[in-house]
Image 1 (spheres, helix red, strand yellow):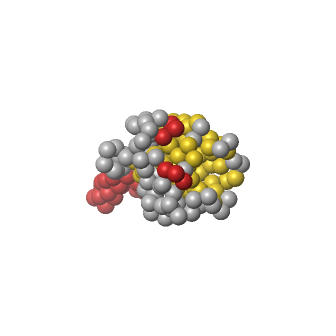
Image 2: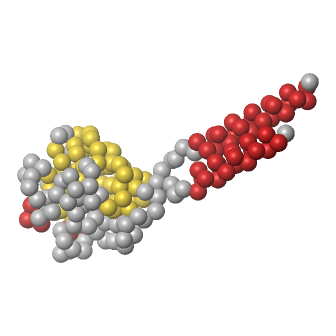
Image 3: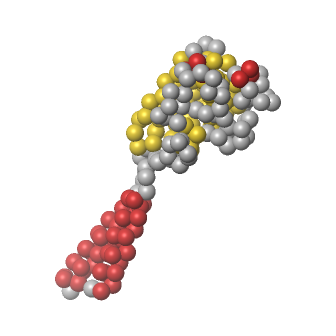
Length: 181
């Protein structure tokens, strides 16, 4: 019986540890530039991890002009992109921006150094038309529409809870086996 109590306590601690982490957050992003619309889903860390309440974007999926987005570019790969989202501000990207790839082309959407505080202050540049410095305002093209909507917590599997349930069922089977003998 003592072994069972120890196993149950370990399983309970595992479940508590797994549940304690913050869940990631899903975001819906849509924008149009030069007649091309991008619709994407972003996933950010569950709590702000950057100064001034910025969320690090972990992944992006969706389409740009009917072409599948291949993924998020690592920070500092295209220009000096940092892939930080500031959802509480009027322009949710800083002047470093969010970079991603689609159809073999890299794109970066960014704030044009804070010169404007509206959606016209968000620009996009791509690796074909501005391969050297994406963050130069003169290289970017202003967006004609932009929406960002929080979709809520992303589903996170809880392996600790499954382990807890499995150990509980094993314990019940073990106790039932002892009672039958």
